[in-house]
Length: 373
Image 1: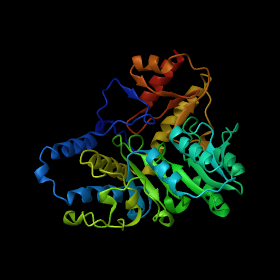
Image 2 (image 1 turned 30 degrees about the horizontal axis):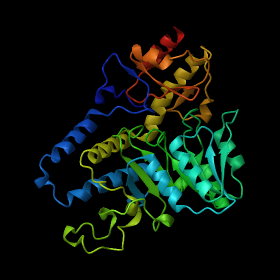
Image 3 (image 1 turned 180 degrees about the vertical axis):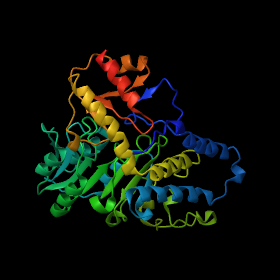
């Protein structure tokens, strides 16, 4: 269990922010790193060509540590949708095969597959909502021969349900099904290991549980897909990019590994150092420690909310950091709570509560007191 880390964030004393699944607050150190990056652009004559690369490689390195993989397998992307579209453009699917998604899956991990299925005369199969809350079993029931791609999440975002990606990954490999993951609602707050799961591609946006800035993200690409087609053809992806004098000698070769999938202007001098600093702090705390600390808060909240008539998935079937409560929610409840400076979200029919290690039991109790009222 980690001690409360509120002092590292710029959160006023009267604010109860339980909405990290919407957007995390930035730590003071992350904001400072971003400000320093913005200031660098004020003196462009001090920005040397090598600086276009070392910040990117530093970020790639810490992201690789977080996901337990090689830095050569990490691409730098602006969003989860960019990573999902990269997967959709590169994974093969034949007429009559199917793509598997979850019921109420996040739109950015649905629309590209809907389009791909229509283009390839394939079927988009939706895993139905499991009445027992067991999303893993529900997915395994639908994983059958003919499923070419399973496009999933680790945390189902409107229920908080947890998917056992190790078991699902094993099933996908047995069937020859490509596994694509949107980890935006879990990476940094719940343990994840590339060697254990072995996905084909996995993406996460930075601005939620990675505690970083908007418009930054990380994409894992398995080595078997390193020869794929990127969404962009930009100069910095190419093998000769580090020699600015040779840029007009157009190179056919890409830079090593997954770097060919990097977004244009990946060297963003304001966002890159902020995103890197945030992941460094997550690694220092430990993802398992974050998960257990936040999980204890949500376990308390789930128990107290049950007394008020709200239901949630059983503790062993939901992500510890992510709690979705279902019940009779008064109209406009998030707005009413916001007037009391308590911040949560509604997603679908779920009241979504997503604390972090800047929260305390007092914050949970304050929310419950308002819900009771």
